[in-house]
Image 1: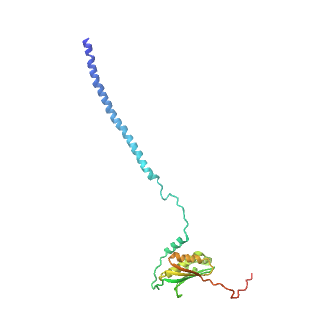
Image 2: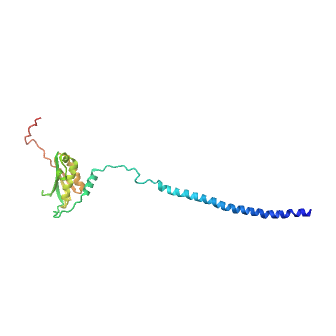
Image 3: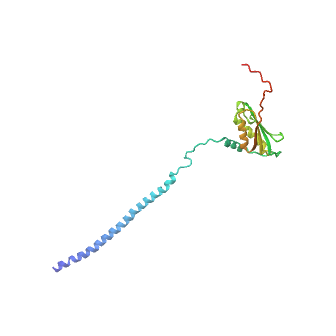
Length: 210
């Protein structure tokens, strides 16, 4: 009976080291598995974070893709661009006249602009034909703008800065010529209408036969 009681005692002692070894082996095996499992999770989280950081850059709208609303340029802007296209160069024998008179003759068929000094001596002049217009295009407002700019450049080459405008005739280039003079850089001190008006002094023409 004593031997039977002694035999089970060593078995219990042997079982304890085996269980401890098995537990340690399981722990050792579980640690790399946990590390391996944690690495892909970290990689996935890093990959998710990277696209999330890149997303705003990719989604940001490009300035080229943005819709651009066209705005029609004003007459002053168009005149300013034309005036800047040809720079005013000072003439070799400049007369150094800063104040003058701009005479605008606007008829139904043509527009003429002549700039003189205060005494009436001519400094610069231009017409629609000289600028390059022909036929019915000479009577347009755009032709009057080009004529006024051409004459103003000639006068400004001699030092012209301030101008008194005198307008004659009922043509369509009256206002556009004045605006062109102002847009190119001349200071307008006064505007006068010197269109001749008959007071029944002369005999009218005979009526046209049709």
